[in-house]
Length: 271
Image (cartoon, rainbow, N blue to C red):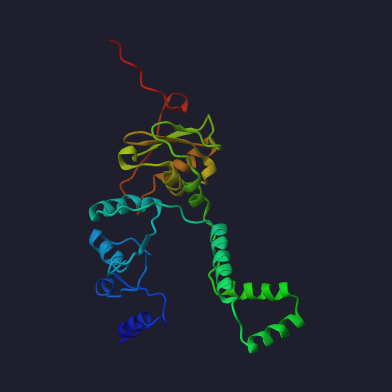
């Protein structure tokens, strides 16, 4: 009964959003859906296709959005390959970007509504303007519209770092916070697994319990990534990184015993 009521409300426009489980998503026939948001990752490629297939039906276009944290990217990329789906990766929008889009939508709504008005509406508007300055009336309207929207949230520092970190591929990535006397570590992710400093950096910060300022150079190699940790943070980082990680239990971080804690090129063989 509740399912029938919810689907009817969505079909006739009384509801704009439907929250559903994977089980419900398999049986929905709603041709008007133009956006599917995966609140968590599907368990496999089949569930991904069933969920995403709720939009863009009957020849229409639709959009499916998946939210994935850096450690989940491997699993998501594998599912996309298995499903034969090409996805466009994009960073999470910052709070200022969200506010700017809200302002654009508000301006568009005002432009659409600011057409002809009835005599009653004009009379109410004149009374409002007699009591308050026009700019204050407009500000009150903006405040009311904003109160209906969720407030945009600032990203955690490690999430911002994932978007700000430079992209490297086998070369040293000298971040501004890099320290030449830092300690070197390795993590078992390399180019063969699409390692990228943009998502490796927040993973390192989470595993080591440090901020991005403690991570220096990041060197992506074929089968591993080597990175530098500030000398004063190295011991605490090593202890934290040894703890089991329930999100990626098989991923190890080890300290490297390198001459002068640096990365040296292998000597060339003669003849």
